Image 1 (cartoon, helix red, strand yellow):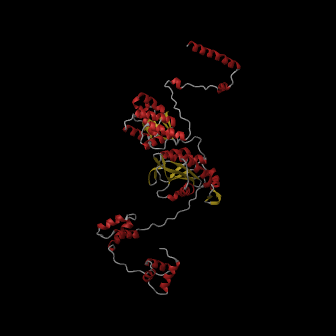
Image 2: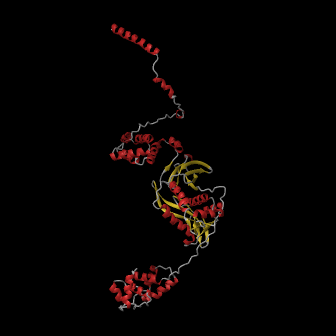
Length: 521
């Protein structure tokens, strides 16, 4: 309890002038007697020892002291169980409080201030910055942070997981940004760096060792429970949370990393250098740069590599999503090579498929060319194939088809109609139209079409035209050359005199013929 100076003066005055005892002072001032004892002790008066009341715990104190001296980290619950075996029948709260008083205290540890040479050390760690929802997937937002030990320059790059491949990418991106690397990289005992450790025997991640051999630096793991040994990167992560990430808005991971690069080269580099606040981090890095190791000419390979098995359907599963392959490769083992943007699928050294990488969950990323032959050979799969396409592009179509089937409508014709509308209006418009049809309780393509047309007229857009091409391959590949528009200008030219005279001469003949016909009649 913190007391003010006025209360402290009252306690001392009542004790010295009035001669009150600690108990009387505590009762009259409404404070605990330990507060009075503390004020008197700080004033130099000897502590008044009160007669200790006998406790049911007294016979077990020697046993408790012996156990805690022999096993300082033994939990109070375990000591209580051992005391109950020996006959203790008291409560647990007082016992646990007494164990806390008797437990040996560690002596405070003193640390040396770390001084590093230019170009010698960089410190590396991950920082967790919440989660990002992409479609149905919830992925962790992880910050790869590397700090130069001498100049304290920070490199920051965000990824959607903390796997080894992104750990390697972070190193490569940091080295390329700085144009050099340090002789030693310090790590905590994270799995991306250390797979196994027994005392001083350390088994490093093989991919990290490959990276270290390529750039010729030494990976070095810090001692267990010694976070102070990499205090520079720990402080850098705290600085990033407060100075960069707090209250920041961003549209995509690429946008966030672009903002991080600007922050690192701007606000972060303009900080005063801790060892000499007369210069900035930028100027300290300029002094350190000549001591860093030069980068090799050939870049380091950073793509993820994974062996996958293709089942009976022409898809491979990679990172929560399915990617299509040619049907000829079912029941085979292939290799996935993935970057942040692209997923490549290899059969040996031959690339058989390439897809944009999806960070969503449960998506089917497809190349229509892979499935065209399969669909043509299995005509029975046409309806299911159309439903799959609609389900992926227009999620509400699944409920629309279900309600239509319950009412006895033809699902085949409904699927075809919705596919045509999808080609004409696009996925977003068709999704809104399907939702509106479901709200009206009319699961039919006519209701969807009416909704699409109404929205088109409200936006004052021209009617959409469905392009239907014949099945003939030559007709599909035919190049149509448009007619020169200048030829149509002749339509507006006035007629010539010859044409007018000719017209005037034709009229009497027509009238004469008409009169003759009438006469004959």
